[in-house]
Structure formats: C-alpha cells, structure tokens
Image (tube, rainbow, N blue to C red; front, side, top):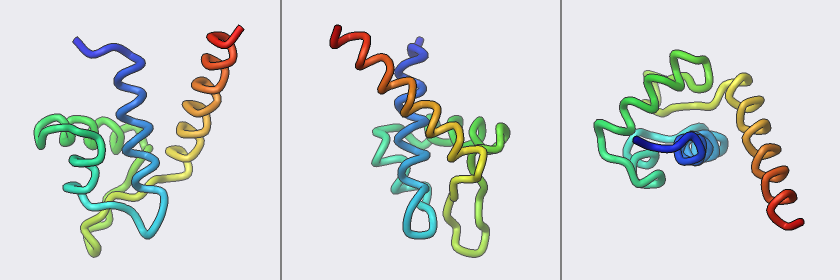
Length: 88
C-alpha cells in the first residue's frame, strides 16, 4: 500500500504538470509521474472527482482548476514545513 506522502507526491507532480502551457495530455502525466496507464487513470479520476483537475475534450489535455491550485499551494506549504522540522 502506498503511503500518504507517496500519494501526495504523485498528486503534486500531476498538478504541477497541468499548470503551464495549456495543460497536459495523459501520456505526459503518465511518464512524468512514473505511473502505469491503470495507475494514472485512477489518480486522474480521483482528482477530477475532487475538483482538482478538469479535462478539456477539445485539446485532450488535463488542466488544473482553482481548487487544484489551492491544493497544490497547501502541499507545497506542508512540504516546506516538514523540511523546516527535519532541518532542526
């Protein structure tokens, strides 16, 4: 079973990849996060269900939503706080 930290790391990679240049197609997300087709499909489904991503049928790309941007900021803040604790 994958740890929460591992899942958040994958979600962060996906959200960051969908931020710029008009989103990202599924293969780019799959290779960038080192996931199989089945795994990336599960993550994308979960993230769309929770409003973090949306799929643009016209361009066939996934794009981050405002909620996804907020979630990404929270993940980054948590990583920053964890690093500060580890450095003490």
